[in-house]
Image (cartoon, rainbow, N blue to C red; front, side, top):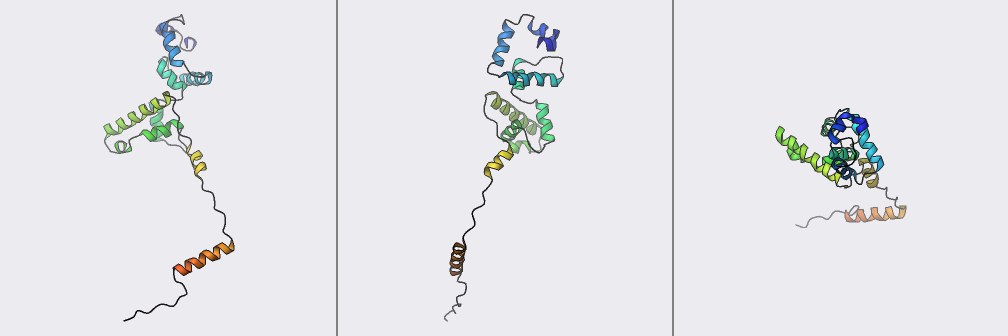
Length: 173
């Protein structure tokens, strides 16, 4: 981070990697894989900011949590398939509040869903699978065709139940 942010990082955390800041960042990065840390560094670079993220924000970036701005963009421009984060977000969104027409209630619903989704991810809980995977699992299998004998027997039973081919009984007066 010192190489990435130069003096900005050094003035905030010091030159020596040991001490309070190191302990805070070590705790924030605990349990993350090298791949996740690489994702966080790439996300940090992608923001183009001159200031480093806080340790909790960096952890969120490592875990693939998008910014609120990215979530709002995805809400306004939905693609064919939502990210796992967005699928979880939609499950937490209070749609009655969101669709109320009241800007304050709508904003509150979005913020609450975002916070719940962030906490869900940060606690290591599973995100929903892609919709296409759910549909694949739920795809109904075509039942096997009935034999000719079974079909004739079923049609005969239906005809008997519906009294097809029987003379109508006249009402007795």
